Image (cartoon, rainbow, N blue to C red; front, side):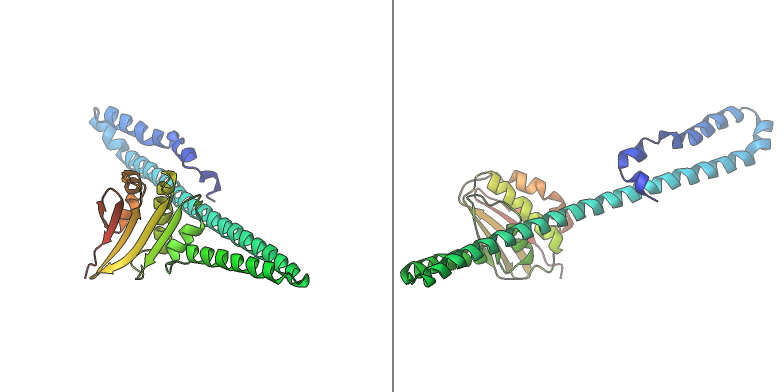
Length: 246
């Protein structure tokens, strides 16, 4: 039913829905000059106004529905992108693991035990590094790290509390926005910490280079406003403080 109204611009172009109310306004101005005429057709005017308002509300409901559908579409696209990135990361990891395992197996078959031991040690270190990189102890942060291109940037994390005050989807987008901004600024090392200070939750982003952090704050303004966060910016650090309402 709402398919023809999937895009908001299609609804906005239906200017003709305002023709009836505007016409009635001009008509009322005309008949008010004649009291006898006004008394005779006052009921017609009321009925016309009622119908015009119904038409307006009817088409306005499509606009509201369109906005909801567009938000749902954006959310689905975001989830699809995350799922695709997760698949690609998992595939690449398993492909590399199979290749390394095959090489080690060949070394054992050829009794080249020293080479097998060296390759196994290298593979083990790579697995540990990749695991530590994506396992942070926080679902949102781990998901964000898995779904951005780190390039030459290293992310170190320190998570000592839960983030139940935040919606996981909101927090994931927050971390993706923040980390991407710093990576684009060629930041080599990003330190992310999530800790409790008293009853309050503190998310700190530290860097090795100096940053303005204005872009980070601007791109996350909805998240900041939604959770009423206090932001403190320094030369190499930005802190988001969530106050416990209790």
